[in-house]
Image 1 (spheres, rainbow, N blue to C red):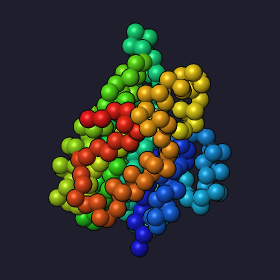
Image 2: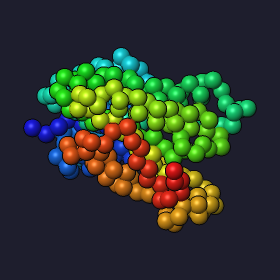
Image 3: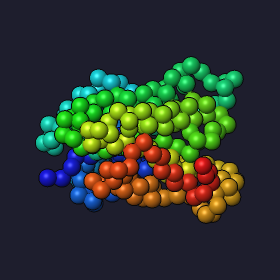
Amino acid sequence: MSRIAVVTGGTRGIGEAISKALKSAGYKVAANYATRDEVAEQFKKATGIPVYRWNIANAEECSAGIKKIEADLGGNVEILVNNAGITRDGAMHKMTPENWGAVIETNLNSCFNMSRAVIDGMREKGFGRIINISSMNGQLGQFGQTNYSAAKSGIFGFTKALAREAAAKGVTVNAIAPGYISTEMVQSVREDIMKQIVAQIPVGRLGNPEEVARCVLFLAADEAGFITGETLSINGGQYME
C-alpha cells in the first residue's frame, strides 16, 4: 500500500512541486492550503491530488484536518512536509506585534501543530518522515525579516529536538533550507533587485521548485532512515556552513 503524504501549502510554488513529485513517486498525497480556493481547485483538477483547506496556525484545525485526510485516504499519515509559510516584512522599528505574531504562528507554530497531529500515529506504526521547509534566511538573517528569520531559524532547533525524541520509533525529522527559488513570490521582485540577488548566487541562477522537491523525495524515502536531525541546504552556494 502506498504511503500517505501531507504537504502544507501544497497547491502553489514549492509546495505544488513537492506534492506533484510525491505523487509521481507513488505516494498518496493530500495538499493543504489556506486561501485562494480557485487556485486549489485548479491544482486538484490538473493533478488529481485531493485538497484540504484549514489554518495551520490553529492546532484544532490541524488535528481535524489530519483526521479527515486519514479517513478519506484510508490510513495514517506517514509523510509530513511542513512547507507553508508567509512573510510580513518590515524593519524592527516599523514592525507591528500583529505582523510578528502572524509569521511566528504560521511559519513556526504550525510545525508543532502539524507534527503533534501525526506523531502518535507514526510512533505506533514505527515509521514516519517529518520534513520541515525552513529557509536560508533562517541561517544568515535578512534585513526587514526579524520575524521570518526567527521563525525559520526556530525550525532548525525544533527539527533537532524532535529528531532525538522520535528516532527510536522509526520516525525521522529533517529540515530543508532553500535559498532563492523561482516562485511567483520571488519573480515579483523588481528586475534591478533580482539582478542583485542572482549576482550573489555562485551558480548564477535561481533554484527551481522541482529541485527542492527532489530533496524532499530523498528524505521521505524508506531508505533514508539513517538520516535525522539534519538540514539540507539548497541555495546554489550562496550560504555555506
